Image (tube, rainbow, N blue to C red):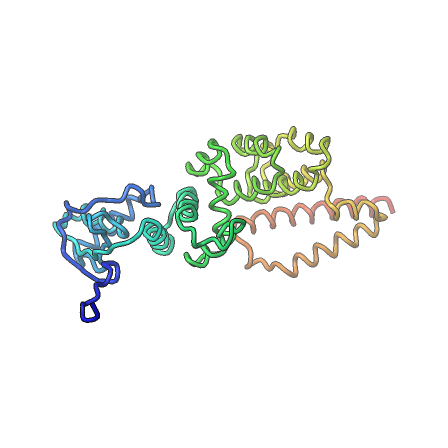
Length: 316
């Protein structure tokens, strides 16, 4: 027994073979469900001149572990064989390996990511340190992402209604907006809020988040909640307009503080806030769309101030 040669598990070997492309099968359980045709075509065009540099990983049954996009491109390019690394791998490790490759090499749809992350947590018990530990932190470390990245993508699957999930998959509602609004709103109002999002009432993320913050702030005030839910925000074209409508129904602490001051003191507080904002955000630091909105807001404010001062001067 002592002299018997110890066998290494197949997954520790690096066996690379040229396999007929027709003998290779895709994995129907892999996390990526959508493949960009243009990207596959571009890769196929490159294979016609350079062939495949990185081998495709397959298991003992020639089912792809990683590299399905390369396999699709190789078929499109008309290649007869492809280099394959043959490995043996457990189901949970397989899913994790596929997810990591898709995350760091190719773009994945948020909903597909959420499904994959949830599946990894379900199949990989060692990720959780206890029954109360969701395992988000450990999983985030394994895939090289933040804990909030993991929790938000799993929330897409667990907390959004089926219609809103479909809207996210179809690109009608941004994934991050949907998750951050729904997770912030009290449970008993989630369905009504999701219906408002499905109707397209919020044309910007900031407007939607302002509404969600008010819902969270007013959860113990049913009359105010009712007003927030009954209001139609689809008539507003900017986040500032939605925020103003929300604050009219549900003033936050800063609004109530300003309301308690004398007019001159209110103006000083508002001016200080504006000066602080202008100091913290230079024009080059904000996005092109935000630049347009900020410029319009400041131009409108300048005109309003000039009109107000003209009225004051006229009365002198």
